[in-house]
Image 1 (cartoon, rainbow, N blue to C red):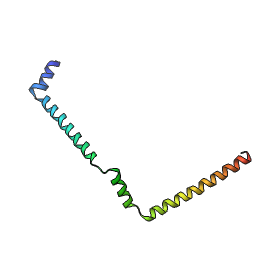
Image 2 (tube, helix red, strand yellow):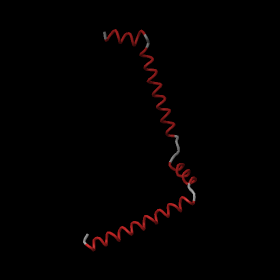
Image 3 (cartoon, one colour):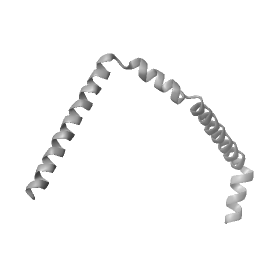
Image 4 (tube, one colour):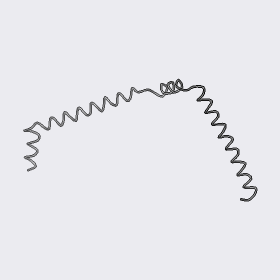
Length: 88
């Protein structure tokens, strides 16, 4: 039965050739996709686009965020020092 099935698929219906052609076509598509990925924007291009999209307000907001975080950190350090001194 296995021999009959193999003969039927590979010789009589020419399915073997169709399968091989499909595999080769898939490999070519994979290669084309890989080449397309290689031509995507590089890191420098991405950084340039990002810098172009940023505005002064964005930098100001970020500076404010950093200042607030610094103040929060200082308050936390003071609290922990006091807790340590009080033995809590």
